[in-house]
Image (cartoon, rainbow, N blue to C red; front, side):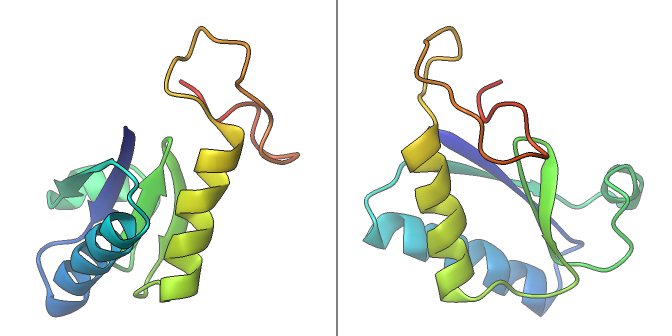
Length: 104
């Protein structure tokens, strides 16, 4: 199961972002856990000054706006293609040059 953090204090855009991610994941039959981070200090720890923001594997991938449906599909599918649910497995692969592994 993927864990996705949505950073925001509860504004309309933050709620919309969370709902969009859940809907797209459901449509794609991808199991996710969405964690809402609402504490300002916790949000600032991610170097985010404008919300909503989306964090996957502790990497901020969207900040300051609602992601598009295609962006959500892309980051959900990208993890599916490159990751496994077992961090000890050899199926963990590099996503790109800036990320060592998608598995924790």
